[in-house]
Length: 78
Image 1 (cartoon, rainbow, N blue to C red):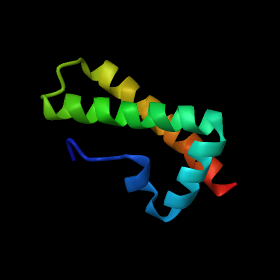
Image 2: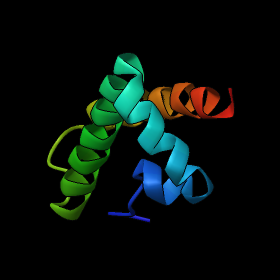
Image 3: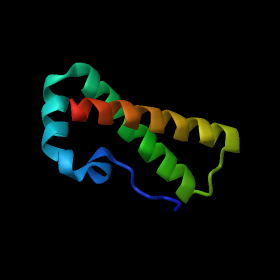
Image 4: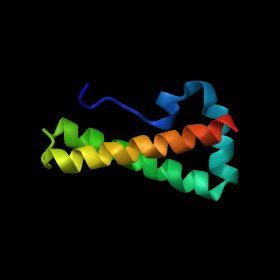
């Protein structure tokens, strides 16, 4: 679905508390979470504006977001 929210809080509501703890106490997690949320916002904005970039660029953004999401999720499970 275009414009769908994929923020960490939306994707992992059962881990909200741990997301907050890691964001405060783990610099790498905080940096990657910030980058993930920025990518999500950028993708959502592009989708809502008719995706004014080529498909390969959009796919690269979505790939980067998925890679970050996987890394962040692994950290949440530790």
